[in-house]
Image 1: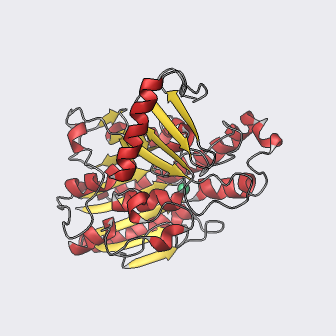
Image 2: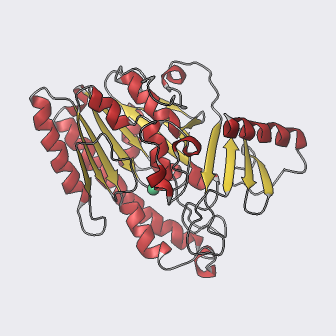
Length: 369
Ligand SMILES: [Zn+2]
């Protein structure tokens, strides 16, 4: 079975579930609406997805650390399918976002000038031809234009404390909606074309977002990659193929679970010559198994600097109900009851001490494992 994997960079869950084309696809897919990213910025997020392992172990836990990726120890998705004889191809936003090892071709697009819809449709046709010759392929497509808009109109224009930004949430929402609507058009065109050529008869489609993006929720983070709040930590993933059930699962899962899920669907066993995959397949959850998954995340708050730090300085653990955040940079803690307080506004760290102890020890367990 072929693999078509699309990352919708910076796509927020609240927009995904309501968008015209996205929601149509969700209805037919195995969809996980609450997929907690390891890191709310592309480089660390994608290295975790591609290895099924948190950056604490792979070496990629900051904007600067892709060179530290333990490529000899961590077997990545393209290497898994390459070993099965797949032709592998990535079209990405820049050379840092993914570990390139295992890709036959690793091509960088120009996010400012390329028409990604046309470009990606051409790539799909190219691999559809090799598919007709009986060759398996893995095609990775990165939709980067939400990021492009945010970079041009938010990151370059404001800083993390600009009053003009945080006082105009409606305007920020509207701008984000424009970017998202273009992203949804892109997805619609790609999926329509794949349906026309019956690609999904023998191709697994995976569509994920790597992290969300702020529209001005919290002073100190104008976009993403600063804090560990839900508006950036919650991403989504869907798996689509005729053989998979169409189900919408709201239970929390983790982005490190994506790789083992793909391997299970493609019938590829984990390779015991490498570091164990930390994530777990989502197939048992789709079959009704009750398997709560605790999610760990890290981010790098630049504070008053204009560059992200070399090492993460905010850590969080999240369950379906609770979030515990440890701010390493100033040694403070936060605890939120997400069911009543999804906006994470009421810090319960001093009032619900029993839960704080429990979440702290979960974090220690993950860090020391
Ligand atoms: Zn991203």
